Amino acid sequence: MRLVGDNIEEPGIFSIKDALKIAEEQELDLVEISPKADPPVCKVIDYSKFLYEQKRKQKEMKSKATKVILKEIRFGPNTDEHDYTFKKNHAIKFLEEGSKLKVYVFFKGRSILFKEQGEILLLRLAQELEDLGKVEQLPKLEGKRMIMLISPKKKK
Image (tube, rainbow, N blue to C red; front, side):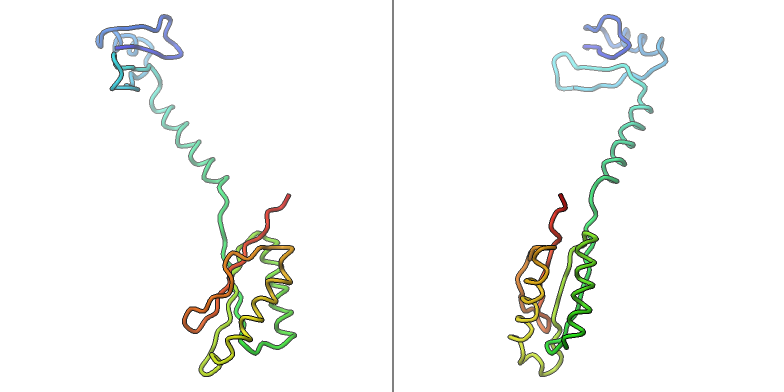
């Protein structure tokens, strides 16, 4: 087998017994890296330290990954101007935080007749928020809800 490692004086081809002896002398582990190579490649390392380093790198990568938060805002088809402004301000705050926004108009009972009003409301909101976020999904009716998704624009 081919033996490699940071603490090997002469990397080269050794028998299994010699490789194990070298690893034992250095009080390290003999780890097979590439079993399909000809001859197989082994490395003399501290295996527990290697596992610890790998785990630490994975944890670091996971902490750097961005987590997507989805906030919801609900309107009615006949939402008043004051309520609209109040909820729009919440939407602005959510987008500035970097959260995705799910805005929907909920139709109760016979209010489903006012689909156009709900769509106009959502498109108006999208137009007023276009400097903070971009529309990911245009208003779409799903059952009693008309849903629109807005994602925040990347900060430079």
